[in-house]
Image (cartoon, rainbow, N blue to C red; front, top):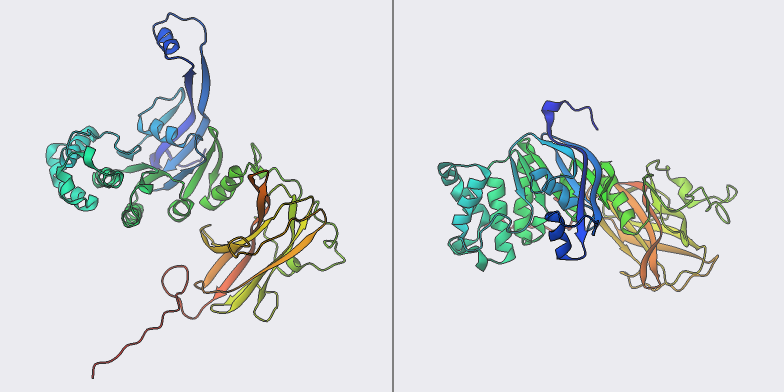
Length: 437
């Protein structure tokens, strides 16, 4: 727990546990509720186990995790939809929550009637809702459907109206559970602009999303849940890196590390990696925050970055060509491995990348001791700034996707530019102005 003063906290979650009882038969549930069955005819499912965290006023915090990790349960506990089995939750501020599509809506009512219904449930008077009604209608932008029963709405219309109500009532705390993935791309853009407005106004946002780019871009912190446990809380970039380990069963509970043994200087320090033979990677500063994991059936034993003259460097002029190079060694038989690289910005958002499959370069099965050197050469049109290179070797074994070796943020690279445009990369536009004659 942090030392943040109480007055600055919007949400405090203290030792929260939520246990569901799973019955084999509905009658077992009925008999127990009536006190007629003294046997335990249910199994206990720990949706959350002793979870602690705090959210400061004005923070935007994301919650990520695999399906069934307890994300939605946590939001429902914070909003009071569910009651914890044990622990305490304190909230300071008016909450507006968008948890489940259509929650709180009466399907027979029109959109307008549901606006008043939801506003009244939140605690607004009719006069206060009247003042906000036009802003809600404008944000939802569903046309004449606002006067039709919501049972006739598409899922996109539903979420437009629900989100418009949630953000227009001027909440101090906004809680959103994955709802934005339902709207179209233009509506999602409008919602995220509203997120930015909320951040500038110093309001608190807590949201669950599988969109890792949104977590990286908008969140000050991220909380990673796995099987009901909080396994990480910190920067979005670190949370996402650990989450990717969880997705491929490479996270070892309680350590924050991967299941893979050894590192670049561990078991791989053999054959071609001895101090007597120069390594490509020696030309680059080591990253103490390097994230490494994988089964190491095949291992990335060397890597480097090169300019268009073939010289090792991590500094590139925008518009020039550069090469990513890596050497992979098989520790055992690996069927048709896939070699990849990605480039992220400093917030952890993946900007670009590719792999041998995308490039339609088949890689034959590797036997123990086999080595491959793969190079990717491309023009760098990223905007000027600092970036991070990640490398990977993956594949399929027994029909299952496997991570053999991944090195996240292995080299930092700098793009030097005398002309930057809008966004992450330059489209190399040509602009011509014809003066009137």
